[in-house]
Amino acid sequence: MVMNSEEQTLIDGLFSKLKDAETASAPRDAAAEARIKEHLTRQPAAPYYMTQAILVQEAAVNQLNQQVKQRDEQIQQLQAELQQAKGQSSSAPASGGFLSSIFGSSVSRAPQAQPGQTSGGGWRDGAGFNPAPAPAAPQGGYAAPAPAAGSGFLGGALKTAAGVA
Image: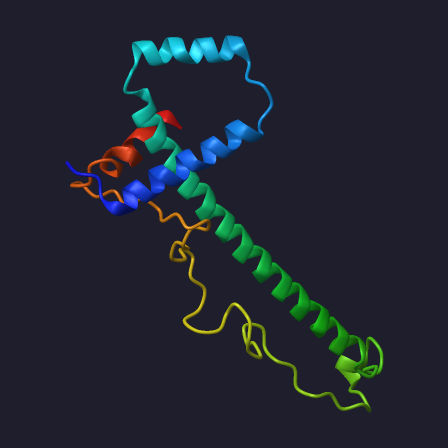
């Protein structure tokens, strides 16, 4: 199995971040470092699997962050639509009292939009509600690793990450 260029870029990017963290962090805990070295001595392949797990988890976090950002934008849009609707209803003239629906009213009302109809720009436009949106592209320049059976490094990454997480 041979590593492809995308996998090389992901690995290099991870170790670049680790180098930056090493230079910017507080002194390491000597006991923790000794314990980690002990495990690495007994499990020399651990950095390989740790790298796979980190990359898969980083892609998942980036994807979830993108989904949160999209939800925040939807919430803001819906709040703006709600405020606009409240503003329109509060500026409407009085309808003649609580018994006017039974006895009639001297004030004529404009027809109201039925629930389920939108004036455009809302989340209901298009094909309707989609309970399973397509996954968003992760941020940070990292693509989510595909579980390709023939891939050398990332081929087993999802399996490794599932076992570690």
